[in-house]
Length: 132
Figure 1 (cartoon, rainbow, N blue to C red):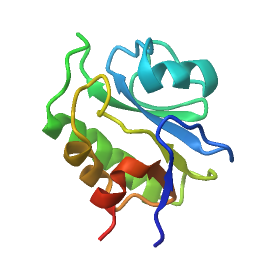
Figure 2 (figure 1 turned 90 degrees about the horizontal axis):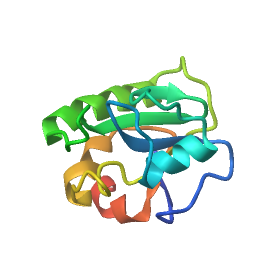
Figure 3 (figure 1 turned 60 degrees about the vertical axis):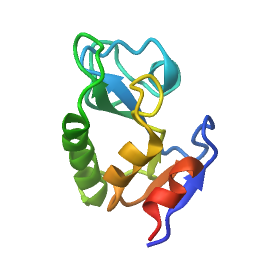
Figure 4 (figure 1 turned 135 degrees about the vertical axis):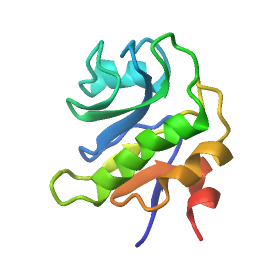
């Protein structure tokens, strides 16, 4: 499987689902979450899953405190399984640097969690963590 990568801060151009880090309260007020709400159908008050042409992966809890890496990993594992499913038909997933902005984690902490995801484009910063 060939991995695809994009420039961090760019936007999907081919209808891909915009995948972003969120908080469990669904307050999409900053970072990629704000972009998702403004441009890709993310819904205020909904911090997990598909909304419009976006997919929210929580990295912060209801009090907007960063979640533990184990908690984030559980949500990423669900997303990875979705990408492997034939049930969800779409042109692919455009994965932002989930958890590496406002949640405060390093690329090396988060990127490896996405190994096994298919039909995704990732930020170039994650290339060294995702390629074998």
